[in-house]
Length: 392
Image 1 (cartoon, rainbow, N blue to C red):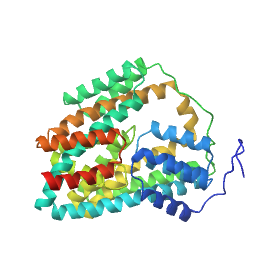
Image 2: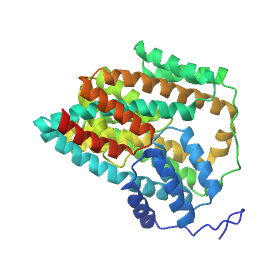
Image 3: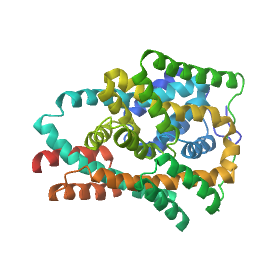
């Protein structure tokens, strides 16, 4: 069959086919949001599960709500292709390879992190992670800023965080100011097809109730895991702008507020996460593993991806209304500005946990330049490990 523009759209795929297709993509999903064009080639050009217009509308929508963009786009494609069950299949399939590798790396780290060679490698990697976050700040700023107001909102968020204000409060302040000072209106390029609403509301309610039941069970059975899950849930709930947006809040909550681990260990977790084909929030799995073993890793990973997935499922029927609202656009623009500022502040804070010397400074500088030249993060990290073992 074809859409109104004449583009062929395939029949509804099976859940197994959706899962295996996104599992294969997830296994090579290095580069974060850079995977979105690849998802488009597979879902639109090869499989014909949806048309270009619907896909492009979905990408814009996913960028305007919390969550890692590539994960959200996977869920969106699954939703359009096979309903809520399809969204679950695509979302889980895309994220599963990164989760499994993160658990393996976390287990190895827990057993080997004190070995001299491992200490040396991570000593260099900590400097590289600072470069990665700094490069993300620059990249995020390039795609977010439209005029001087955007830069001022970002600077305000950085200053508020530097004054020890909770990052969520900095986000709220910039969202409100965004409503007042940003005048750019959203661009609308057509309408996306609404999902089949037969039983849709009932299915959404069932999904929300099931998710709530998991948290109730954790509360009754293991209170420590419940607190871990609740924290990760809150982190993702306000992570507008992609996976890196969660990093300042995660650092503040885990290192500064609760002291569950020190800054150097958190840096090591980010480094391990960059060796997986997943978004940077997969670091939550590392945190959970170190706190409560494999079960902690599962709970933390589940909780840090759940809110954005639920928001996507609940709001897709209202996609056109939200995208076309100037108030929604201005508020989310202010939020995105705040994340540039928060990333800048976290770059400085993370740098304070690195034992700097000339070699580490050169390593960080080289990594920063390579990332601005769009060298893939895993190659930068692997090269950093080799150089660290040689020169440190």
